Image (cartoon, rainbow over all chains, first blue to last red; front, side):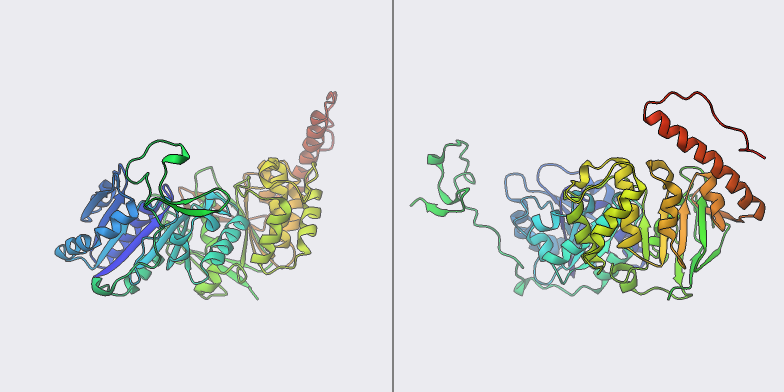
Length: 233
Length: 258
């Protein structure tokens, strides 16, 4: 089993790119199963099912979506094995930009929208900096110069990435991504680890506190001036 | 040295083979791309910009000097053979003109002194002066376009130049075309403007997403192009007067048509 984990900002074109990639994998007689992770709602499963791909949806609801994805990886792999798939493709929601859902031996794919501005690669954190492949979408909406600057900015945070310029509408670049997926290594769960540690996240908000005043907050807390402290037992 | 670019035909919007199966464009030639809106002109230009290898919607293949370009050729801006002026007229980058040009010069491996040259050249193409400290996002349509033209001419100084409609932007289009085409380059220009179309050596006629035929500009058309330029000058003059609040009292049509 080979595993591809796709992360990216909402609306960047993850699903559109993946649909083209999957079609191309199917043309080459590979089989794939897709898991789409989201927080509250998604109907992207219809797009995958429409092209005949076994699709599972996971809604994380009150749990952090990346933690939810990682926690369920074992079940997802089992499910894809039952489908006799060559590839398990997990599309994540990825929201706070502090986590990266990639494991050491998966193929980590980050999808990022070129119209989001040339400073975006500096802002989005580990899901870009620890990716193997960075797929840049919507490049046709901006000038060539801006596209080139965007690319340079990606290399600033992830010098080893392979950048693919793709278009979710026309399918440009998706063949190249499919080739990389075919080349990706086998994954065994026993020795698998995350590439990047998650943030320190146990706090009063996690357990349901809604009051805003400072005095009610416990856990690892960071002030706006950068001072970090632990409040509590 | 790039001597020739070849477009190998693919398919139109309906999945039919496009009638033109091969186009060779040699160094020093200017090609026009004409056709109604939605006929696939911008897609053709995009195929060349990406040096498509049957991996785009049209399934066209682009050869350079009769060879397939390498992956590096296709992606690394320092090796990029193609400079493109796209239809998009606005900058989205949240930075100043100076910062933007400095960054782009770095991407292309060009010297920092280019920044000043680009701004100077841009200011010859547009009426409203652009300054290094201006925010990119507040530039007018004409200023953005002039800056893009100058950026393509100086920083992205590449042997293949693709221009997608320079006429809509309120800049001096003939000067812009001259600045962009330089000497010994391969130039393709998408246009709806008969004057620009007749300034080219050949024009590819697009229909339904496919290359329909290639028309060679006749010597007679070249003559007509000069006549048309006179009409254009007249219109430009009138436009300037209207812009400056003058009253138009007379139009000198005499001698415009022979």
